Image 1 (cartoon, helix red, strand yellow):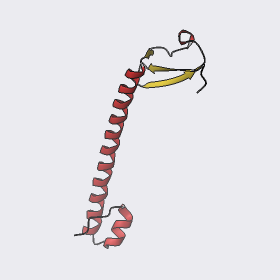
Image 2: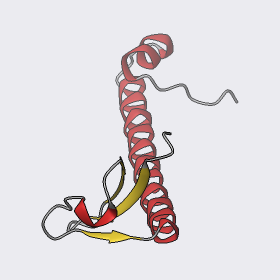
Image 3: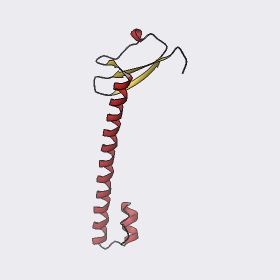
Image 4: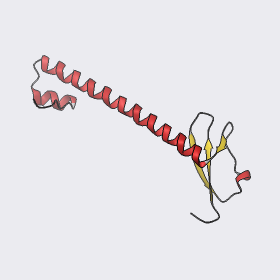
Length: 97
C-alpha cells in the first residue's frame, strides 16, 4: 500500500460492511447514501459476525442437501435400484456398516 493511501471502513444501510483504500482525505471520500464510516475495530467485529452467519447458513444448506440425497438414495433403493446406481444418481455415499 502506498504511504499516502488510507483505508476507510463503511457500514452500509443494509448492514453490510466494506473497506475502501483511497488517496483522498477522509472527509472528501463519498460514502453511499445511508452508509457511514466506522472504526477498523467495528469493521473487524461486524465482518467476523457476518462471516460466521454466512458459514452457519452454508452449513445448514449443505446439511439439507445431504439429507435430501440420503432420502433420494433410500427411495431409489426401496424401488429396487442397485446400490451403485443409486449412489451415482444421488451423489449419496452411505457410511459402510
